[in-house]
Image 1 (cartoon, rainbow, N blue to C red):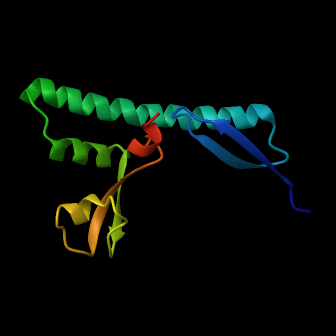
Image 2: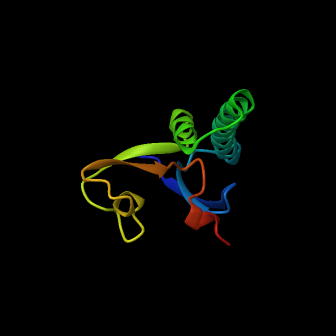
Length: 119
């Protein structure tokens, strides 16, 4: 017999409501540990990115946007997604005149998107 599922809704560290699906047999302590582990991993990615950018800024006295973007990709804060057409009215690739298809950099779930972070 298949295990029933339980739906858990909570407000994450970014202030966004998230729903997770867990096996019914998963106890509260197990779920809390899973969520804690996820937050800990997110925190490690953010710390690595901050350290990378700050170290470079102190060493070179400046950090340009290209370096920040590369560092964000390296530490899992951005991902490259193939796009065959603009993703909407606010598509920066289209605004900059980039030809399609192209690789579009998008925020990962580790950080809030600018829209989510606006009050």
